[in-house]
Image 1: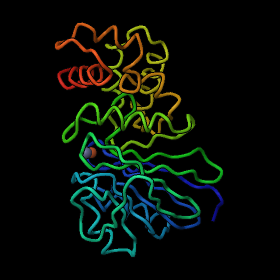
Image 2 (image 1 turned 60 degrees about the vertical axis):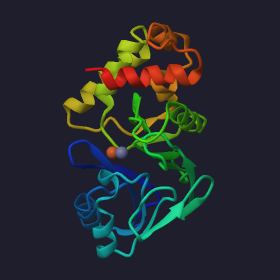
Image 3 (image 1 turned 60 degrees about the horizontal axis):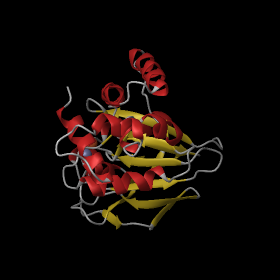
Length: 260
Ligand code: ZN
Ligand code: FE
């Protein structure tokens, strides 16, 4: 029994993280695409699962929900505007989920999927946490499967406005490939190069690069920096010629899609 809230990324599949938050023997998980890593963690740490949060409908985020609700008495919350398993309680912008004294605020972040939501909470005694699913990655953002560049830009703007100390809990370990692309966009960004060096060390030791935090992402993530002159300079020769904010963001996202 401790007073400290613990935040742990549970690796799943090849590059997913299922985020586990636990405190005094009680647990919350986010985007359990697979039940087994969660069941293993609950057993080894002797935790009771109270809450499951789901950010969007993709199988690598919801696939373990049925097995977890069968094995535990957890309550499941997810996006109101997506097809969800029947046990999921629907949530949308400005609604909250309370757990262990934390009021998680729901932020609608369409773009990767049409109804994607994010969860922002401020646990006592630790930096705020953001569970952003496949919307914001360290050094990158999700692919636009169901939304427009303008929607994704607005979604990322909402996340960028959160407190800079916010811990960014992304659902995939895509950091190194994102940073390789980011360096091609901003070759003179020294914080970006230094961060890439740090992340290579972590990955070579088999450690996660996450959580990141917002202050860092604002300095290194081109998808949060698409209005910066340094980023725009790299995009100005794209076709069609970008004119407004959404055009620049669209050109950046398209370049990343094509980048190897
Ligand atoms: Zn996804
Ligand atoms: Fe995913």
